[in-house]
Length: 457
Image (cartoon, rainbow, N blue to C red; front, top):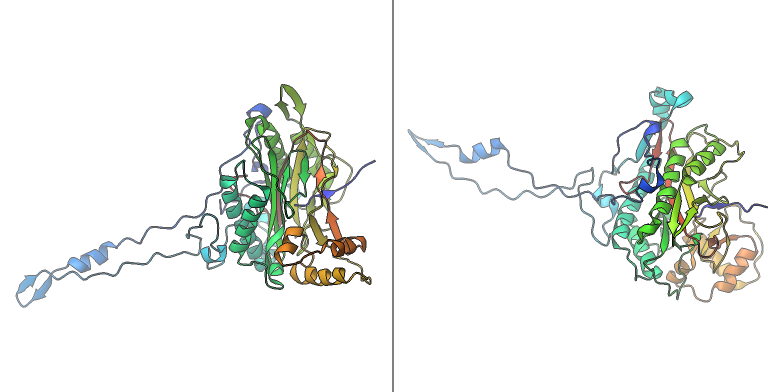
């Protein structure tokens, strides 16, 4: 989601080494732009009757001196079982809660990557393994949310088509997330327990981030559009933040490949004790090795230099640290136990975004001041925001869904008072195109886990 902005003057995956996170080939034109969607676990077949059971059924019975064939017993059909490793089947559109597909809460592990160099000892350290085991609830919540994200985005990737309205697309994703987490968010406090981690971003073309349709939006997805799909899922405030880009014209394939390659470069570089500047340099090198030809014109792909990844803390999508996507001098290090969203943005424009268009995203500040509010509608709205979202981001459609009416005056008053932060859409130069890919990583004591990794990206 929501990247930091700085304005300037398959399922269980085998553990792999740090260097084996996917890297695209060196020739930009040959780099793939996408992949198949992550498969949903399929149901197992009925258990077959064992040989011993068959022999028992057909064994002859000794009656006196005569042997007669024993009458076969009529066996009751065996019921299909849903195993703890997720053998149930998801519906389309997705409506089956993921918890019911994994009744023992054994959700798929993300991609585990061993630490390298001076941190390689962590893989086998008994002390670190003990610390890792103490994080069981934390991991279960994160893996639950990640599986919801994978299943919903798999459906979205298959079903989003030109001709659909952005409102239809956003509500389709959000309905899926709410159903699969088991939290519809209509009862007071329910959305704080689980559901949408932040509003579904559907930013088109030169708009890079923070755009979701408000009520009455009539925008229709076109074949020539490049759309960033950025949505979050949370369980108990553990937010899984992951994004991908969709395009329906192959002319944009290299733009998408650049952002995907750059994100993977950032994922490879990230880790405990790694400096932010080193991650930014790796991302920029990968991104800017690409160019794209549009309308007979060859354009370099640039990093959007004032957009960044960020750390994530419980119930808040933005913590205190930023992950740059260009080289610089930030010597801040990543630390054990932290969670980060590694996201990159490529652009055919200036590589710099500014606020533009109508605001839709908002969030109550963690350190919101306790100030008197003279507008009664602001007081009422703040009470509702606190009880239904806490510090999780929300959008105007979510307030509409809760039954609020004529709330804009109160909402603007909360923004002016510094209690609520407004996140306007972030846009590059008109006529340009932007692409984004993003994953959430957990810096566990023993391994780095790319929690949102799937077969699609």
